[in-house]
Structures are given as structure tokens and as C-alpha cells.
Image: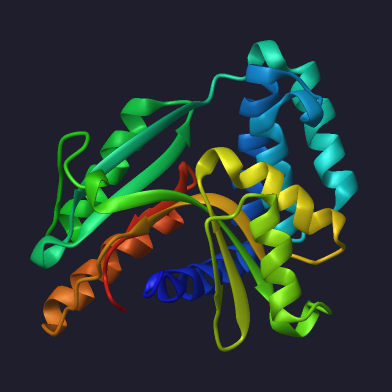
Amino acid sequence: MSGHSKFANIKHKKEKNDAAKGKIFTIIGREIAVAVKEGGPDPANNFKLATVIAKAKANNMPNDTIERGIKKAAGDAGNVNYEFVTYEGYGPNGIAIIVDALTDNKNRTAANVRSAFTKGQGNVGTPGCVSFMFDKKGLIVIDKEECELESDDLMMTALDAGAEDFSEEEDCYEIYTAPDDFEPVRQAIEEAGIPMLSAEVTMLPQNYVELTDEDAIKNLQRTLDLLNEDDDVQAVYHNWDE
């Protein structure tokens, strides 16, 4: 899985910044609301909700906040009108970008996403235009300093639970799964008492693209910043080799 750690580490830095702004809790709160509406308030019978709860815990959302969010969503289930929508497009020099959004106004979100691409000298494409360059995978990241297990023991715990791959990086361990196997592997890690730095189903680029032109880098960063600042945007994936 060489190269994936670069994506993961960059994403962790972004998520820490988001947490500082409080945006990540807003993102997760919306995801909880949608998951409860679609499958009910019991995570044991609602895979999507269980996945969102795992993401919430990995981002240090307090348990009482999670529980309040579930109860509120259960009470307001009929009023939840958020929709998931995905946009695909190109940044400077053909950098592939995927944007996942959760919105109550698709026209507003589409306009904002298109504006972010345009301001960075890129353009929104048709569905599927870049997603074939990514693999959908479960990714669990564990901080070495917080893990009491030896590397081999952690690897066997993950593989026995159904993980596809295990990688030891400089400061963390990374566990990769097929999307359908993510929750059983995450549960096994949680039951083993191992704290997770990150746990989610994500999009991993198959290859990375380098940018050397300063204007292209500046424009791409502008697009990514605008997207990440948008309250409707849940996640942004790209294949830029930062």
C-alpha cells in the first residue's frame, strides 16, 4: 500500500485543523442525523450509524455529545432533509478531486463547489470522470505512542478480523480494509482496547501527481481551501502529491 500513508498523514493534519475550528463536529452531527433517519437510532442494527460513531470517537467527540445527537436525530427524523451528493472534477494540471457533500440545498452547494473549482483555474466534471482513479477503502490509523500492543500482535488482530493490509509508518500504524469489512475490523480494534487516531471509509488515490509550477500549486490550494471551508462539504479527496 505504498504511498497511501502520505494521503493519510495529510488528511489527519487537515482533520486536526477542522477539529480546532469545530467543523468536524458539525460534519459528524449531520452524518448522524442522516444515518438515524435512514436506519434508526440503534448502531447494532444500523451499519451506517455505527460507522459514523466510530468516526466521531476517532475525532474525540464526547460520548454524551454523540448520544445527544442520536436522540435529537431520532426525534427529528421526519424533519431531516440532508442529501448526500458527490462532485468530481479537475484542478490545475489535471489533478483529480472528489468532493463529498451533505446538503439541504443542492443548488447552493453545487454553485459553491463550482465556484471553488473555477477560482482555482479548475473545472467540475461529469460523474465518474475521476473516481476511477481512486479506491474505496476502510482506513484505521493508530498512533504508535498510544498503542501498547507490539506491531506483530496488532497486525494479527487486524488481519484475523478481516483486514486486507497492514502498514507500519514512522509514527503510526495503518490498517486497510474492504468497505464491507471495515466495521468488523474496527470493532475488533476497539474491543482490544486500542485507541484509534482515525477510523473511516475513505477514497485512496491509486497514484499521486506532482506539481512544480508555483501558480498551479497556489490555485489548487485555493480550491482546496474554499472547499474545506464550505459547511456543506464533508470530505475532499485528491491525488496531489503535496
